Length: 183
Length: 306
Image (cartoon, rainbow over the protein chains, first blue to last red):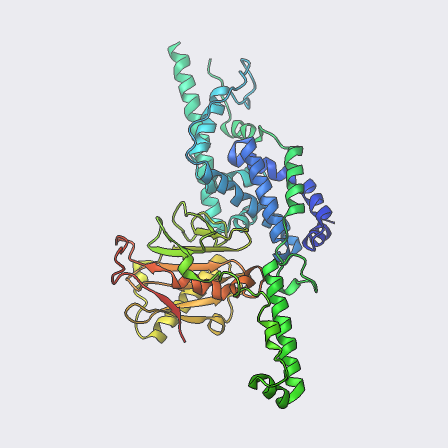
């Protein structure tokens, strides 16, 4: 059914394309938000990706490849957003205050802050690979296809990004621990 | 009190935080732009009637049809009729019917490089000119082999036509010093460039990578002697490759992101002619040299080999 939609959209059927936006829009937005960590810029990136998808769709030879192709456009649009706004200064936003004694997986204000900062230091390439794998659940081979690099490079980027973010949490825990001992 | 935490679980929770639903306003914006943006048509899938072609292209097609009809009519009428027409006899020549017809060349010539604006790359060792009404999206970083050549790649100097339908990119691809120079006789040099393009094609996923030799058009850097380059048509774009010949000097690539026969590039006479126009405006110099303001020996000029 999805393939048929792509075929119809490729022939210029706007309704079929709108159906594809219905089908993939939420997922694209979720990915874009997590790469960009900004709702408005994520909306811009999704809009740009779908615009290019619509314009270039007649050149997509294999409708079955619409998914990876759209993801590729989305990742490029996100990179473009990051490039356009790379000089932005540190943004300060109000974060909800966590209650005490939460479960292990609770993301405290400090964790979130540490992760946001560590994630902001990652390159767009590292961010994309990390989000596509850990959030979108895409296999490494498909990510390699999307971002246009060998699987080995994807593995390396994923490893680096994960290690960096994990280290941010651990460092934050050690600070907490030290502060607890001193108290 | 310190609480033991599982970093991966925290990371996973953090990653899942955030919106998962595309706002309705964005959905509406996409629908609106879809309605107002024409699709690019691939040559092999062109409908019998061009619904998205530009006015200029319509005029060009119209002029071509008129010329074909006139020439065909003259041929059918035979030598006598043609002689009368050419000799300015009693029969009015049909040619005046053609000459007032608007054509791309009757309007401002988009390939008149004298009117173009020169752009000097801050990322790479070249300058290149583009039509005055085009916009430039400068490269924000150096191109690496992890990059894919495409019209929006931020590692490329990307040029967009005023209507956004035509995109041209230029960038340099690093070569190892071990790869040596691409010199020798032109034939040897073209062979070396072709070999490099074959590798580039396979590594970057360009298509097709077969019969590059059969499709490639030789180029020469004309400043002193022929430093070889190649112009290669691919499925959906036409790219040119050349180096200034220094040891390990990068391979510079210029691409028009349309096949040669696409309607979008018809006002420019096709992708190849547009690419040749861009190439003819280029100056290339060694990466470790400053820009040759006086156009001295480091500058190069490209034309296609006759």
